[in-house]
Length: 192
Image 1: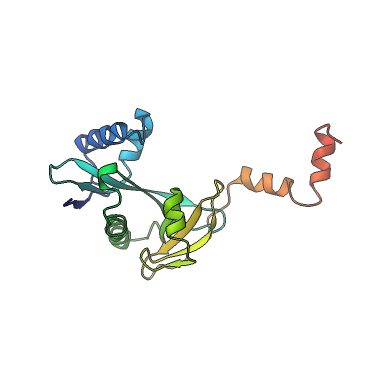
Image 2 (image 1 turned 45 degrees about the horizontal axis):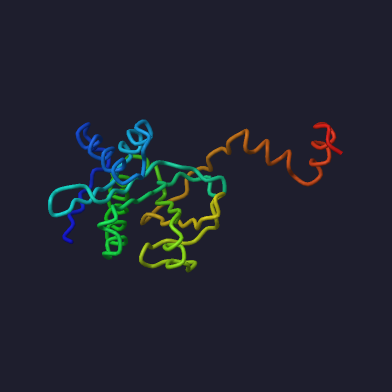
């Protein structure tokens, strides 16, 4: 299958947005229209097959993990069944990463240090299970709250930014659950 990969980061038109929503709906990937419309605005690259139909999409959104406290592009990639197993995963990702890096480098102040990848697919997690994955230029940093692998791929020349503040409710919850504070919580909650 011949595939054309097209960068669309920050260039998603209403027509392309509708096309992406239809793609996700027909592949039962994102069935909620509001969620699909939001995700369409985050498209980085799309793949089109020989007939011109969308057969793959990569999306990104800025995310700050508490462990990093640095902005990263949280990257997701979805392929139609017809595109899976055709050695497109890595070349597609590499083009999407390149599009994000070039965009980020064009900014006066970078908005991201690189790409954050969560391998939600069990097959991919078992295939890519090294601390450093050269194909992705990515380093394992731990597990997500869902138990999936998290990798980061930093952009060339990425410099640390001042640490982003932690979300206050999360910090408060962690402080409340810290050793020594748990007994107080149990007493005040009526548990013994």
